[in-house]
Length: 212
Image 1 (cartoon, rainbow, N blue to C red):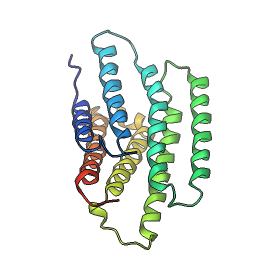
Image 2: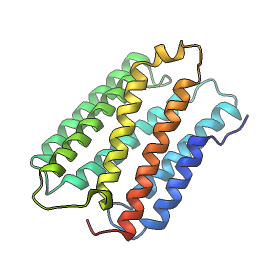
Image 3: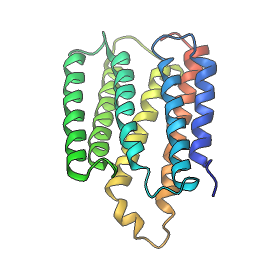
Image 4: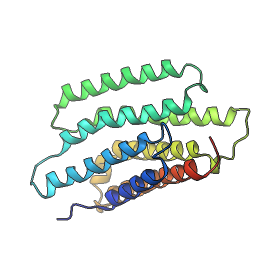
């Protein structure tokens, strides 16, 4: 009946790296707050199920969806503002899509069931943002060593995570019905390690690497 899982350990490590690296770096230090909220949500979610014996913790993750939407789009906006044309329009479209999908999901299934419709829609939006950022990065005139470029690692981790989680969510029923029910869990653990590993690397580069 353990509360701490592999995913939580990885998230806590990434949070500690952010705390060490980003405390004095504007915009990026928002990741410290975001990672703290991720860790708090995951731990409290486990406590609800394993310690308090609650049937579901989906309502907690429905609240977190709003927090996630704000921080991820804020980071993308910060990376693209002043560099990508019409970024304000794209951000506005995303806000409308999020509000519409979130409202629809809550209306259709209620607040006590996880809003998987909104989660899938916004995950696709994050993938589009990531691919658009890479398109801009490849077409910029200025040379950049991408392996020492913090935004590259942050966007790469985000893109791979949300693409992978979207695919797993789409094929959720198929994976659950397989003989080995743990396959989906192992896959989610893997993409979590990819996400937080890439983010931690971006934080280290941002603190001690090249200026960007």
